[in-house]
Length: 197
Image (cartoon, one colour):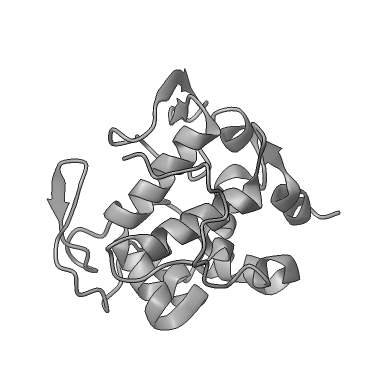
């Protein structure tokens, strides 16, 4: 079994990683922001950020390697070796991730809706999407514009490859299990899980 397959089958605190990604995808679909993402995009980012299942997701419950929760989810006080905070539970970390994706990175959901996985991966990597028409983003008390010259809001310093997003796209292309998850999720897969922020 490949590292990707093991990652997709992994359970953390009783929740399957794939189901958690489906829940995030559903939350983007169900939000008031324009667009949505697929579980495949969420899983590809989580996989790259965690080394396909490393301690940041299984021990620190921070699947997207977020710098902070912005009042969404509770922190454990523990910090990863890189200094990034750990969450108290996988529910808190995933909830915070969904909040960040929906409110802090709506250009990614807009890019997915307009052009699918590849365009969204590129937007995630370069920190903006020129087709996003929602104006300024206000998140964590900061308002910013997402353009190539002003306010590009990078998640990863490495931009997920060169060109931006190519590592995420390569992961999708190399794994049929991820390709099968590149779909719209319109029904909540975890009925006991809710967006708490």
